[in-house]
View 1: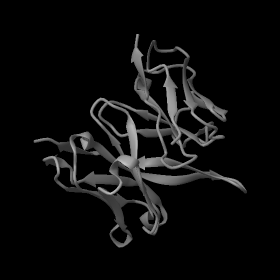
View 2: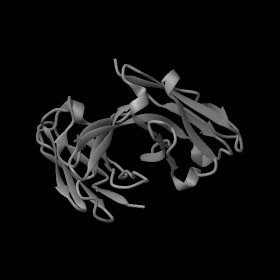
View 3: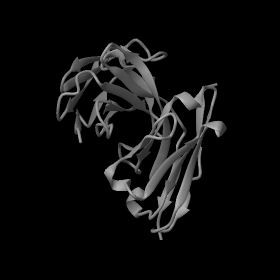
View 4: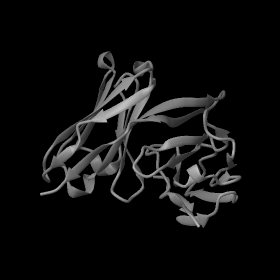
Length: 107
Length: 126
């Protein structure tokens, strides 16, 4: 199975900050990488697919980059509604494994 | 409105069984691949099972193989997860999720889980 490792596990930030979350795969997954946002008590929502494509309806302050084994999710200017947990997921092979999550908290 | 509505969760004793359902509406259910994803309390997301659009292809995470069975009824726009021999480690919120083809080229298809159900809680406890 492909292992996905996110860093950091949590971070504290303020409204307006630029936030970067990293995701690393245990082997190359080219660009088969998705990012999801999950707010407490609700289902995850798709933000980014194919490593860098913004899902319809996701705010443009979210962006993704990377290929191979190293990927990044960036929030250009953190908004109050962005405080949540973010997960990467590889869709390269079954099982489609998720990272352990990164919780973005209010500083 | 495009939506998935999960149901069937509850409290069950270790060794017991439960059948989860997921009702789809607002889209052509029969052409989409579907998945089950679970989340134990305070933990991250774990993919559990996949089923192809016609129901003939399925796959499972190792920890549930031989105990869980995924199925679908395209005539009823419904997805199911039959869970047998449940253990305390199976306690989680179970989400159904639609796998959509987001992009493609001559060699690759990029899928993502674009629609999720609201989740149904399964608690395995004596």
